[in-house]
Length: 469
Image (cartoon, rainbow, N blue to C red):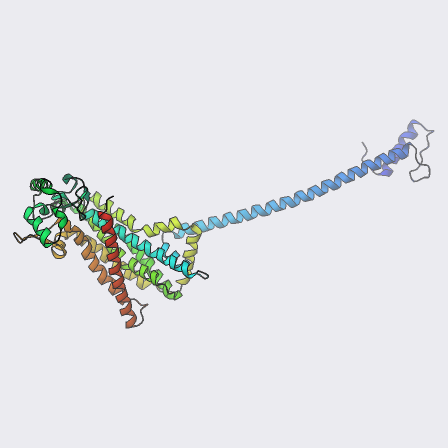
């Protein structure tokens, strides 16, 4: 094995071997004129092999350079992927660290920012405002339907109703399904009075056989003709622990309401900062601040009054209303991707960075406490509220009756009055209203919008409650 592969090294080795084996052989140097012999052939073959070897080495070096470049590209991509993964982990940790205390803004803030973004057409802006209005009205309608369905549940037979009630024809004069009504309406003299003086012509439907059966059922089951048997029995059976759970359930049911108040307060500040002329968003904002909390209290009270006063029912009804009142926040998770929600939060944080929100936070917590107290009062003093806001009078004896059919009025009227008073107070002391003219204008517009929103949701819910196809 020769380590010297140069021409001179090979020639030296050949000279050594030939001179040793055959001394008569003369070796002609490569550079001499005598060429073409065996040595020249060896030299040519060796040169070809060396050329092929050099060519292979050149190709190997080229491939090696390409491989090195490819490895560098792979390393760059891997480094970029690792950087992206590290950034995602960092953002996830930040979100997890801030999530328990960070206040998220719902679908209405996203719609408002999208409507007032640069390049948004007028048609798209109005479409987004209408979506916000429809969401709020839909939420109000759902809560109002809960009030009606809980106070006057539909039935197919008398035993479907609570004690002291029977299955009467509904307002559309349908007997099956009907609605649960207080047993005093099954009394012939009272029913005649209600038909002639109150205009309840639907009570004339059903025929004598139906009303004789209803009257017999009520005579057997109605133990307190002038009172609502179901409410009186439930209240007397309520324990001290049940009352404690009632207060706790009131706090739980109204937590989404106070969160909505905080979001609405931030939206009003953002509207003032951007100086955006969005009348429908203004209406949506006021309805969420002053009408939705009232209906949340009414729906919670109606659900509680329609069932037994037990700790389990208090807690379940409070959680159910809390879930129903947070529908707009749920829509933000359904309709908006994570990146879009992050953009909304960053934009709002940037706009509110220099704002003092301490006053609004305190007012909302005070309003929250008033709503909780209102809910507890409605449940505990329903009988007194019925005598104030409802109550039926039988002409034959002149006795004012506590009707189970008036539970809806008891659940609605006190929260509505409290909400009107608290809403007007909060609008009047709002620091955004600089002059008295602005305060009066905002107060009047808020009052009108709340009344209009209540009327619309009441009409829609009444139609849905008594419509059966």
